[in-house]
Length: 289
Image (cartoon, rainbow, N blue to C red):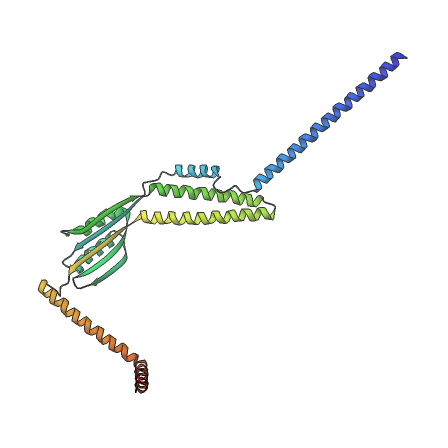
């Protein structure tokens, strides 16, 4: 009898142990499932939220690799300023025009005129950078003295590479935003990503504009040319002095004529003013009398 009781007790204890073990396993599995679900939810949330501006190291590294692959040549902006006296402006301009055509340059601005002392012509020329030195040399031929001659070369290589790298980084970031927008499922997430995309697009357009400006300035150099000659109608100090007196007299006469012509346009108002003045003066006399 005791033996039977012991056997039944052992069976009950074994069954209880198995049940406890199975319950522990189920609890472990349940905890693991909850952990996995929470982790996947965090990943989804992280993927759906766009990265904050400035924190896109991967985009920067990718853009830097793009820039490193491109071996940049030095980016130099050349500018020249020439000012000299010419004995014959027409002949000097003919020489300059031939040099412009020869080196495939273009005239950006051409201003000419004269004053009491001289006749002048100021020209702004845009020339391909590789022909800049040759154009300066040809214009300088036959010039005995320069009142002003300045040649400057500004190195913008560092700025050029920096702008290009930032532009590439912004483009990579834009691509990531498009990928996130395609995966977004909530309207709020879509709106947030679209706002970030709009900001990135504005920055890209600004960088593109700056890069195009640098490219244009590097590829085409600028030459400011100032030529002048003494006014041929005024030779010598005495002639110049009396010439200035004659010009002053003419200007005075012209100003007086202009004044009287303007007064003729206003004659009705002048008559009204005079009539009112005399009426007021007449009444004032009556009161005093």
